[in-house]
Image (tube, rainbow, N blue to C red; front, top):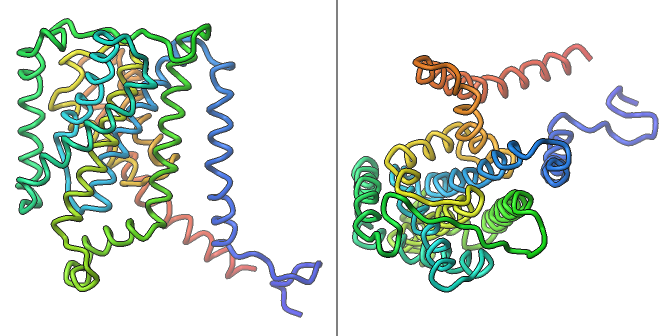
Length: 328
């Protein structure tokens, strides 16, 4: 009997099997930790983590566009603002909570994404990126000129509780966490669905997709609609988690930072990857806030370090695993 057989008589699991099993358990364990975390940290960290979850949803929105559409957006702050102001305006005008505002924000995000994608359906690469940048550049002026609805420079407050009688700090935290988990679950289902495979086929092999009845134009419009809808959920969740919306929160830099978070997460659509991107956007600036003029330099070094680690660590791990197998 070979050395690869354990005492029970069954073959030993390979390294890939162990990694697969660890991956299956990683997300449930992570969710359990995040559910219990507010009882172990202070209130300021509860607020920061709620904002982190909202930013993680925005990172997922950009990653969906890259993974399924093969395109890059530097204007997703526009769709996030659609969701954020939907929740805020509905609360101020109709007195409804996030439970009503969230579906409305999702619907408006999807519609706005489709309305943008249809005229620009023939654009790709840098041309589409510049088109999305135009949205982000025009957004602050649109918000300020519609001050009767948006509150102009001062913005709007979002303070209506979802569950009466529960502290708002916990509600902001758990609402953002629930939306983030729901979005990652929906993306996991999409990834294994027939529709998801069609979208990937349309991106990778347009001719083959046409042969199977999936036109690339409709696939591109659909991906943009899905991505914009997720971005709107991010904005709606951010409005509730941070308790306020204003034009300063949805600028061109906000859109660029979402793209940076997507790069840091390596365009992953899982909960751990999304949290890496969201944490980089939320926690790194907070940790560097006392660095003064060195903030841009240190932020750039942190970005470079994360990208290099993500690129080389799997290779180093694979090399060590092969050496360990060779020794054994």
